[in-house]
Image (spheres, one colour):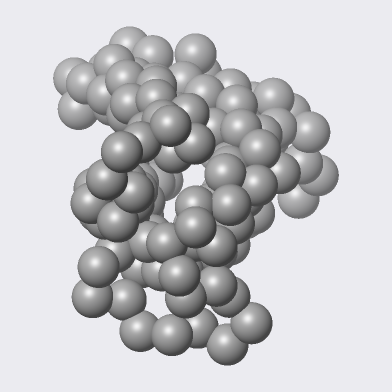
Length: 147
């Protein structure tokens, strides 16, 4: 399914999040220009969270009031998305003090990958299928996007 223009910026940001998610996992391949040791990965992940993900999570959560009450599936996502953002934030905050960094990074990477894939494969398509053009325009305004 082609991504609706309103959701394209968020969808593009997911690409970098997926690279981070894979980088953090134990079986990760080497990514050119990215750290390979646990301490380097932890520092990179923590910085990525602060520079990219906090704002990304906020943008995604701006959508939620505009999709409330459209259908039961979207209402379930309204509950799930902030909970997952909160869980991921907790994992990122625990990076600095975790006693088993490789295992923690692996857990974080797997959780981030599952979250992004859920949004890309279920949440965004459901928004596109369920929302009218007027509702998508409201979302665009909330995200300050001009189509």
